[in-house]
Image (cartoon, rainbow, N blue to C red; front, side, top):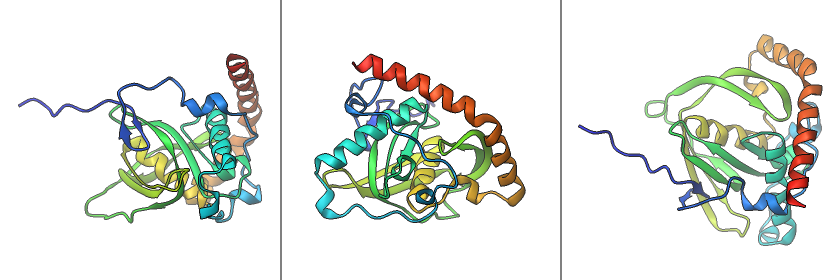
Length: 220
């Protein structure tokens, strides 16, 4: 019996598209922003919901554009609003799942469906964070995740993923509630990650600056 074929088309806002560029089009309109680092207040508290009056505004669209370009410059697969200093519950992503399917989009005011332990096992894999520059640590996350929220125009949105993309959805939603992945680690593992971060951060920052310059030159 042959295995069921996988639809490998890129998913944009959860929906398959027949073609898509190497980078999200939003990035071409964006500006690279500074990424906040562990210890900054905006990363460690629940952020504000995007209000109805903010949907559909040029300011919200510009923020998403900037977040996409900043994410690419930092070589990330997801980026939350508080990671660029914005006290808003929003994240962008460009992330593959374990089947190699690429997922791209943004979610505003995200809420994760509650995990059913009998249906959705936890998987332990390496995880890192752009706001904890450099190191990674093993962390259990649900193998499958469903996030509900809104797009930038206020339309309801449901995005689901498995494997690495499920991890991304959980990680970024955590950010909007003021939780970093290191907050889910045991004390010893957390201390080790922070020590490694201090040793690695300067090299990471230098690479980000070089990437930002390259992306800016390419768009000019």
